[in-house]
Structure formats: C-alpha cells, structure tokens
Length: 372
Image 1 (cartoon, rainbow, N blue to C red):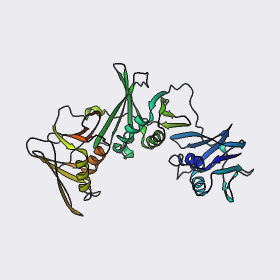
Image 2 (cartoon, rainbow, N blue to C red):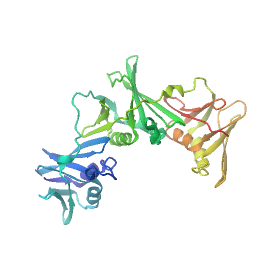
Image 3 (cartoon, helix red, strand yellow):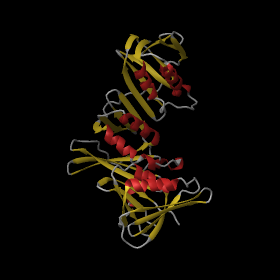
Image 4 (spheres, one colour):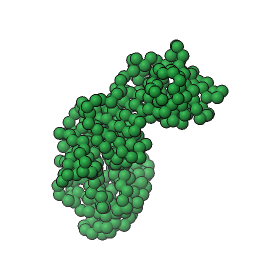
C-alpha cells in the first residue's frame, strides 16, 4: 500500500474516527482504524461493537493495499507533521511510514483481515433529510438523555415518524425521569421513513450522527433496518446499532391541564439562572422561583457555598406562588431555545413545568419540580 494525500484532509478523516474507536478494550484492533486504498481514493474505517463509519477521501494511489493503525497515535503524528502532502507507505512487516519533506514517522499496524466489516446493507430504503434539521433536533434533546445504565432504554433518544395531511414529520424524545425534552420537525410532502413503532438511538451513536450532520451543509440520507440506523452523506457512511428495548410512553408525562403561564425574556431568565448556578453543587442544585405580579424572584441557597438572590421582570398576573426546580435542568431547557421570549407553564401543586419558545410549537421541555 502506498499513496500521497493532502495533510489537512487526512487529519480530518482520522479525527472523525476518534470518538468511535475504543480506548480500553481487550481487542487491540478495536483501538485501530482501517485504511484501504480504492482506485483514486482511500477509505478510512472505524468500528466498535455499536458503531461503524466509512469515509472516503481523494488521494494519489501508487500501490493498493490496506492496514489498521492506532487511531490516536496516527492522529497525533499527522497533526504534528508540517507540510501540505504526506506520503504513506506500508512495508512488508505491516509497518506504515509517513513522510513529509524531512519528517518521517513509523507506526506498526495490524492486518486488516480481522477488522470488523462496515459496509452499506443492500435493500435498506434511504430517505432524504436536511442535516441541519437533524442536528438541531439532537441539540434540543441530547441534554435530557439518562446516564443511568440500569435504565438502558433511557440512555438514548427515541425517534419516531408520522404523516399527517400528506406532510411527513419526525420526532425526537429524551428523558432521564426528571425531565422530558420533545422536538418535532416537518420534513415535507415526499415519502419519508415509516416505522410501526419508534426506535432508540444510543447516546454515543447520537454524538457521531451529530458530528456527521454538523459537517454537512446540505442533505443526508437516513434508513433504519435490522436493529441499526444508517446515515449517508456524499463521502461518509455511518451505521449505529439501536438499543433493543421499549421506550416508556412519554405522552403520559405531558400535563393534560394547563398551568399558570409566565412570559419571560429568554436572555434575562437564562442569565439569572446562571447566577443562581454559581451557588449550586452536586448536593445542592435547587433554585426557588417565587412569582408575584410582573415579578419573578429567584433564590438559591447552599450551606457549603452561600446564597444568591435575583429578580427579573416577567409577564404574570395572579396569586403569589413559589416552586423549586433543579437549576441545571432549567438552564439546559432554555439554552437550546433560539427565540427571544419563553413561556414557562408552572403546574399546580407538584405538577411539572412546561417550557416553550413563544412562536415555536415544535419544541417543549418538561421539568419536574423539587420539594421545598
């Protein structure tokens, strides 16, 4: 195997694999990426037990072949090379030599024969969706994914699709049992992915999907089949294994009765919450929200740190009331809102709060209150 490749392009390709390859594994080859030449391009492949990625890049091929190399060490070597073009060649003893001007690196590899196969599955229908739309949906749900491995069905986002009045839509849901984030997007009148029931995409796979779509300014293609989700762009294929489990009926958590609605400027509310968060710790992360006519007072008390108070103007008329929330949950829910104004629907008694952007019905976040 021997080829010449642009340094920055090569570095970008290797960097894509770093979140996928396993750092600690009993199978050393899973810490490696696979490089394979094909006509006038090279394929860079990364795989672990749940995710597979194939990306191809333009290169000047001198001699075809393949090899697997440590993703981390190869990235560090290529990053430090000064120059525009790198010459890559493999010796008979599976040692790869990287040369650029007078700089030379040698890195031992493992044969490609034992590397997991990551190929596009035939017969899987693929449907077009804007990468920016998918990325935005992930941004508005990923923060609410559970980190509790004992509840594996909550350690990913729930993806479901629908079609109403000839318009296809896709919905993402995430919850950790204390909050629930839901976002919907219409994807047009064309035929789109259809599922009998939704699927659960794991956190790590979701991160790789987000990374892929953030690099794509246009459309990507998505397909789901045989326990996996596949995404394709012009030069990248990503396959993510789905979580085998039932997602809870999230619709039961959505309040059926409307609480009192408080209108507040996103920026003012977010900055006030961040000031409260200065006082929080792992043990104490609550904020008390007290309402009176056109006024919201926030208080956070932590015996280990101190106390914080703030007051902001809001649109509210009604009886005085106080309710407590996890300040980080409120911050997460509001940070992903782009609109200037937010409606906070505060439930009666211990009912949850519902946070919405004014003028945007496609996103809301439910946050459970704390006992005062």
